[in-house]
Image (cartoon, rainbow, N blue to C red; front, side, top):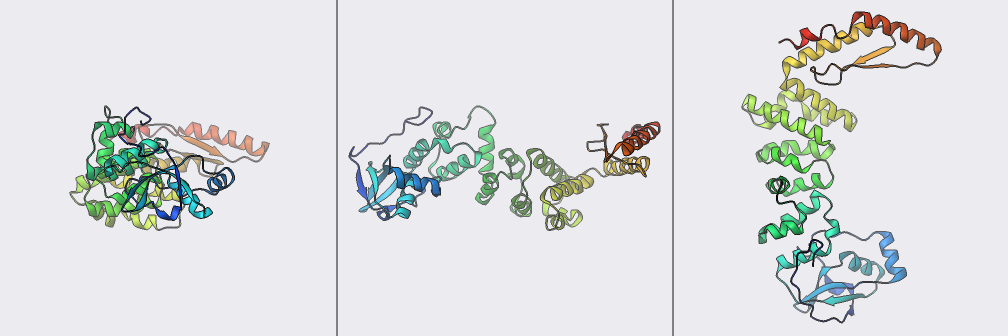
Length: 324
C-alpha cells in the first residue's frame, strides 16, 4: 500500500529471502524512476551493520531484475558482497513503476521528481489515481502546470531539477516554438532565476514578440542578451542587466523617464556623501539613501548635506515624470 492509501497489486512469490551476487541483478529499467548512487556514509553503514532490508526483484529469462533497492545493490557491488533479495511475481511495467513510486514516496518532495515519474508513466497512460499516488493535487491548478510542463522537451527537466526554473513557468514556455525554446534555454541553464524574475522576463519577452510580430529569437538582434550572458559579470549582475535591457525595450517611454529620474537624483546628490537610488517602478515613490561614514565628522557632514538635498525635494519632478 502506498503512503496515501492507494493499493499496488503485487503477489509475493515467496516469503523466504535468498542471497545472490549483485552482479546477477539488472538495475537499468524504466520503473527505477529515481536511481541514486549510494553515499559514502550509506556504504559504510551497510559495511558496519549489514543489510537490514532485502531488495525486491523479479525473475525473467533466468535473470533477476531489480524492482526496489537500487542504492543497496550499488553498495553491495562496491563492497563486493552478496545481497539479500525477495522475489515477487512479475508485473506489467506500469504496475512496476507505480510500485516503485509507492515504495519511494519520500522522494516526491520536488516538482522535478514528479515530472520524472510522469514522463516515464506517460507512454503507458495515467489516471486520476496515479496522480494522487504522485501527490499531485488534481483539484487545483497544480495538475495543469504538470501537464503543461510535459509539453516541453525532456531536456528542460534539468532546469526544474536544479531549481533554475519553477513549474509555473511552463504556462509561458509551452506556448513557444522549438527555435524559441532553444534560444531561451542557455539563459535558464546558466543562471538561477527567482520565481519573480522568471515571471518578469518571460512576460516581457512574450509581450515584445507579440508587439513586434516576430519570433522570440529574432529579438536578439535588438536586445543583445547573449552578449550579456557571455560577459564576465556575476550571475546576479547578468540577471539584473538582462531584465533591465528587456524592460527598456518593452517600456521605452518609461525607460526614458526612469533615466531622467536617475539623472535628477544624481544631480541633487552630486558632490555629497549620499547616493540616492530608485529601485522600484515609477509608480512607487520610495527612494533609497545611502552614505558611507567613517567618523563623527563625516556624520555631521552627511546630516548637513541631507538637509540641503531635502530642500531640493527629490520628489519634486515625480508628477511630470508620470504624465505621458
